[in-house]
Amino acid sequence: MRSFVRSWGLSSLPSRCLVMNSSVIIALAKLNMTDIISVLNIEIIVPHAVYGEVVAKGRGRPGSKELEILINQGKVKVLAPQDRALVEALHDPLGIGESEAIAVAVEHGCMIALDDRIARSKAKSMNLKVIGTIGLLRLAYNKGLIDKDKLIQALRELKEHGFRISDNIINEALKKLK
Image (cartoon, rainbow, N blue to C red; front, side, top):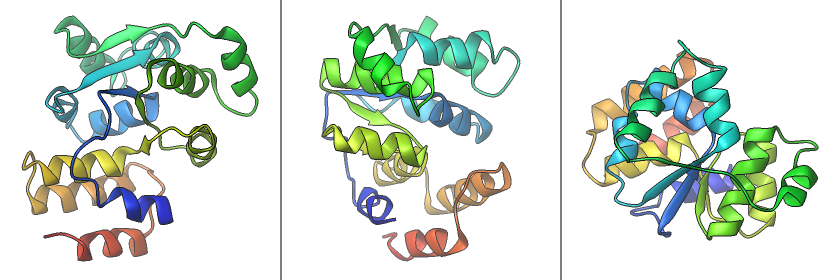
């Protein structure tokens, strides 16, 4: 919870690039807000495994079409991690997408967008800067891309879509808004 509270203080991304995992792309797609990815003014990267999860395996589901469009527009780059040993070491207990995302973030010195608690903990233990879907929404709010009402609506919709977020966290976050 502390990392979540800290993430609400972000005013800009402290890195030149951001590696995104499937859950963040899918959550933003469910909110119809993938456009915020393209206006962050930094390089956005998805690993091959994340592309496979969202676009190939997820064809027809939220995030698939949106990610394909962002890639075709040149707003998102797909990369394979070079350090396969690191990917394999991370793969237990993480999924392949999370493992590749962490490996790519390490290799390129990028911040990483993850929602899974275990994956976030692993990334932090490797000294990566971590943000999640909620942090990206707050960043969009801070940059004036969405207003307070849209942010509140998005937080509530995330919960309706099965995103694990308590009312206490939502209320705490809303108290911190300007």
